[in-house]
Amino acid sequence: MQVKLIVKTMLLGLALTGLVACTGKGHKKGGAGDEQAAVEQSVSTEAANQTKTAEELAAEQEALQQADRTVYFAYDNNSVGGEYQDMLATHARYLISNPGVKVRLEGNCDERGTPEYNIALGERRAQAVARVLQNHNVPAAQIETVSFGEEKPAVVGHNESAWAKNRRVEIKY
Amino acid sequence: MHTRRLLQLARKTCGLLGFLLISGSTVFAADKLTIEITGGLEDAIPVAIVPFAWNTMVGQAPEDIAAIVSADLARSGRFKPIKPTSMPQQPTQMSEFDLARWQAKGIEFVAIGRVQGAAAAKYQVEFELLDIWQRQKSLGPVAAQKSEQTSMLLEQRRAMIDNHSFRSYAHRIADIIYERLTGERGAFSTQIAYVAVDRSKEYPYELYVADSDGFNPQRLASSRYPLMSPVWSPDGSKLAYVSFEKERSEVIVQSVYANQRESIAAFSGINGAPSWSPDGRQLALVLSKDGNPEIYTVDVASKQFTRITQHLAIDTEPSWHPDSKTIYFTSDRGGKPQIYKVDIATRRTERVTFEGDYNAGASISPDGKQLVMVQRRGSGFNIVIQNLQTGQVQVLTRASSDQSASFAPNGRMIIYATVSGGQQMLAVVSSDGRFKARLPSTSGEVRAPSWSPFLP
Image 1 (cartoon, chains in turn red, purple):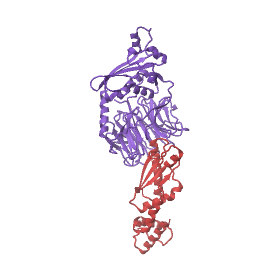
Image 2: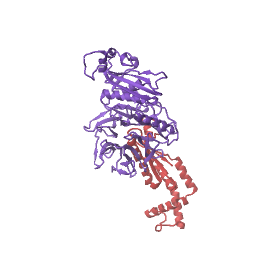
Image 3: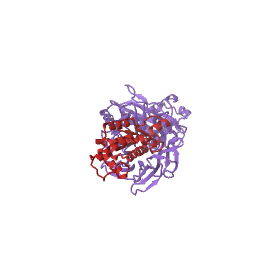
Image 4: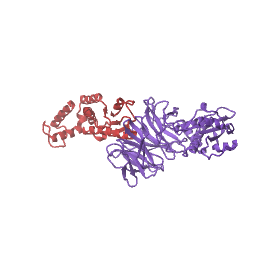
């Protein structure tokens, strides 16, 4: 949240000094009009790397390091819980700031059921996380999904405790 | 016989040359699968396979033929072979045979035999199968010793084998005895493929083929990343399987006896669940490159793909019916996974399973009359068998995490993966559910079994 605000302010400042070429109509100072937001967005995509300070990039890296890399799922379920939204937003910001970076989402299931159907379920889970990232404006080209089904458990065990830890999507860079 | 020996030699040679294309290693694992019978010998026929005589001047028998035959017959669930220590006598030829002592023991059939050294490194094996109660032939008055022997005699065979063929000929003897006494073809001279996982290894996932009794495991592939779903081609010469060696899925076809391996499907998304057509020219498989998992067929030679299903739901686990016209598969288009069938020509699709809220992993029997699959029940995930004509379902297993069922080529036995005592292992169950055995490995997890066809 903090980072976004700093970026927005900086961009406004730059726009006012005329250093950035604008594709849209003139902007209004302050406010949160749709047109202005759209212009900010397009400017952001083009100029992000040039306008980020070293501190901002470092802050994003730090946030990413701290962020969790695993989304867990309920049995027979592929919806991403609300508790993961902030974490995924952090990943999304990092990816948007680093268009050359690809993220790999690995979907997994617990061992129950058939191995190949579980490959398909794992893919659904990975795709669900991908959609969250895309909703945060991460381009699809930066996201790769793979499903390992039940073949790569995080915990080898045949009880609910192990199964819960295996129903997951792992976020890998 | 000659062909099989050539194939065996080829297999051993290829193994030594090392066709472990992923790891580059040439070391074979020596882990064997052992057999633990866990249920259902009440109706089994009591038989005795008497230890064969070893009539050579030199050395010891490389294998105990009688023991291998006994183990095979026991594993079929149809027979109850007695131990040599329980036998009233151990004759090795007809003249030594004392009928009354065997009848007193309640044994119904006895096999006796002899191994004799012939030319250099060649052995002559002879055996007889005797019907103690002469039920197989009409009962005549008890006459002279000779005619009594003749009326008891069901089989009498002689063969020339070499040093390396003791196990395979023992399996042949078991097939002969099984066929003579049940009228069905024996499946003892067959093989199984399976995946072994040892997470302490650098390449934890390994694909093996072994004799159907678990002996002679030969490693065909090893990988840092998962290997799945091996299936035998109808002529027994190739395996199709799923490999994640490139950190994403692809469908591979690999020769069992030659150093050949090719990637058939490596699209983005899922490439999985291969199933051979009855003529061995095509594979049905699952691709999700178009957005969600769909069934495709591919001509293995031309690599031409044909899309079979068109539905937003998950469609997976195709299994080709022996009539070549129908593919059975799993779909959750109704909300939960159930088995459907599709007519390849018309694409007309029909639901096949109506019991329970989870039916998946269908495998059609060799005669096309039944399918075996995984069903979720109160006890967990079990193997069940469904009659395709009547729709009647019978539960075959009762553990909690059973999967990957595969028919023996005579349709009589089903091999599958189970968790027993906290260990992932293989197990067999007879198609009527009466006989069960576990096949625990000496180390690691074993999964994804596939039974070979009858081998040439």
